[in-house]
Length: 177
Image 1 (cartoon, rainbow, N blue to C red):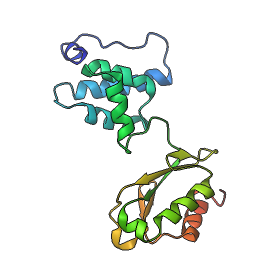
Image 2 (spheres, one colour; image 1 turned 120 degrees about the vertical axis):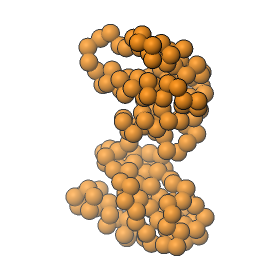
Image 3 (cartoon, rainbow, N blue to C red; image 1 turned 180 degrees about the vertical axis):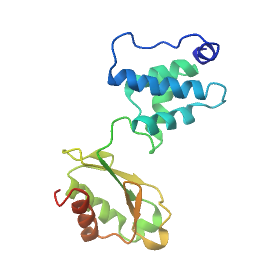
Image 4 (cartoon, rainbow, N blue to C red; image 1 turned 90 degrees about the vertical axis):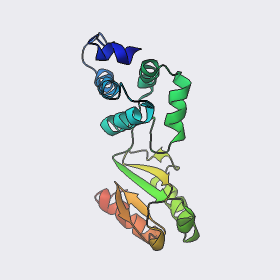
């Protein structure tokens, strides 16, 4: 297993060409693979590390992770696409999450999400054309008593309306958007 080889001092395969973004991404992956080499069920911690380091799980890293863990690429891809926390594409400069849990839905989250999609010009799980905002559904942000709730760059906002959403977007984009 490649993780065992890396632990025993053997060199982990690395791109041979000069430094590239892809090479930097693979360095982050290899660092995580080494860190979690002895852990049973290391896939989720590795994916979290890669997501935290790069902001997403690049497609070209999936075979590297799969090979190191003796998994199929389909298994790793399936985990990346199953959990809403993981992204297969880079996010926009700002990430908006709108709660989709029952309490928020009961207080108008569906209308808020529809408004956000129109305002940003993208669907849920999408990014605005200018790359400024990524819109994601979330399942319970812990603000049930103050529904509907959302986060903007991990900062919670409660009792959201279309008007307050527009104000946050305008403030974040410097009056544009």
